[in-house]
Length: 357
Image: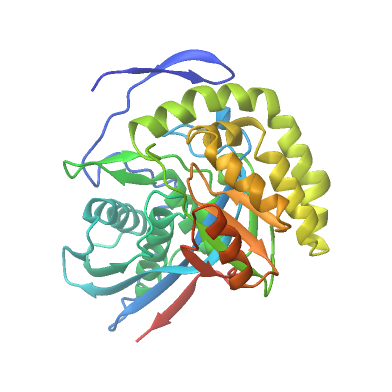
């Protein structure tokens, strides 16, 4: 595969080879291997993980496809992915359309805990892929917790979260996998619910309940721009890094001095003001402009209409709205712009659930 020139470190031009590999290769067990006492469960175990809205990366100069980190902020949604597993004597029997990513992370987990048996795995996702709602991270988090519970819980929730972050992959068209971008925000929010803020190296810096009882609406504007694959890579690793070099201190300041206090007092209006400021700063600006200025136009009109919280998730194009307004009021506002409500939900403040048969 051809090498691409990207901005690495703090604006040093480097080369990075974006090389796919077979599921089960390039595994990182993080030193978690040990002589665990495994007690396989006889029945099925189901883990359910919420989706997420990823509001911003703090500094894209601190992460790459082979280096998770960079920090960020996001919150969990009441839309769910689930994984149901059952221990079997050997092998992996996978019922899911994205088999390579499941096979890879299952292999990571088995090697980490020293499990020599197999798993029967069935996965369901929220069917909204590559629009900024975190289906891959939620699926893999649910899988990790389901396998862990099926073997008696050898790993902690934090170990599972870190294993996922360091082994996060997306599948390729030929059945291989490739390292993806991971800040740790999605798995942190999905694990514990509410709003999560992460620092570098996937560290969970802060978590708090968010917008309890408020309505969350997601609109997905039309776009001809890809948010996955080569174009996403070029965006994140070049222009976004340049802009974060300029604005990373401001974004971190806004989170520490304004966002966290606003979360502590449940001030949705103030939180919305901070996120709106961040939409024009650093890598978030690059992500929004990636789709053209129409996304800014949509969000500006929504803000001007009095909605408390408006922000684009991840690299988009999904726009998240958090408000006390009703579905009818928000639907009318969107209709005037030629948009509609794609998802109606609320914030998940509980996090991952487990159920054993």
